[in-house]
Amino acid sequence: MSTVIILQQMAVIAILVSIGILLYRKKTIDNLTSKKISSIIVDVCNPALILSSILSGNMTAQRKDLITAIIISMIFYAVIVIIGFVFPVLIRAGKDKRRFYNLMNVYTNIGFIGIPLAKAILPENAILYVIVMNVMYCLLFYTHGITILSAGKEKLDLKKIFSPGTVMAVLSLVVFWFNIKLPDVLANTVSFIGNATVFLSMIMLGAMIARSDIKKGFKDIRIWLYVAFRMTLIPVAAALILRALGFDPVTVLAVCLVASMPVGNLPLIQAEKTGEDTQILSSAITVSTIMSLITITALMSVFSYILN
Image (tube, rainbow, N blue to C red):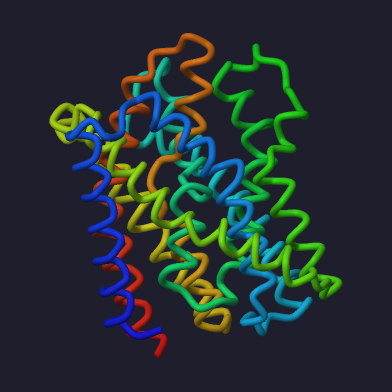
């Protein structure tokens, strides 16, 4: 994909986010509406987008690519989990706050932002890697993530792993593996639902930015260190390593995109449920999300140009 196309697509994303900010400030979208639409995105639209991407017929990926995606995902998250423990120490975060920075490094916004962005700016085959990484993400969060956040006190709830998004992601991989074809009526329905994902997710992103205390987050030096390290250095390192190992441009761009995602919402939601102080997570989500529009555009443009 050319740099020009990526810049154009990211400009569209920025406009959609701006519309979300405007709608929130005009009170067309309030907190309750935002919560409900977010649920629709996560439980209905995103799963449909995942499946429609597989059913589109535009993918040329083969079974070996799925196996490759699984292996890369396992290695990627194994490294990121280790980084999650090291990074808080490097930035000298207080011992009572280290678990939050740990979670920020591991659990980025793959589902809500990564999947729609991959669909919008990357070649069709790239979605396969994003789907696999999304499954890995869910498996990790409801085991490793909850354990880290609760300092080992919270019981694991394996039922939560099987969310609509996770189930549909696994189902999509099964459809891909066995080359299953759905009736046109079902395939078209799934496609129409999935097509709404990018617009809805981006305006919800704008609404989240509009209601956040942006100034406070931008004053936190540790969040800037996070942006520089986790959202810039790690994606660059991942892309260079994969390229040096001889992987194709689609794989490199897909992993680079996933690695450059801003802080995810799941740690914040879980922390709120257990009565934790969510100030760090909230500020990090806001700042990293705003900056991701810049960092993702830059990274995707540079590596797209290099790989062409």
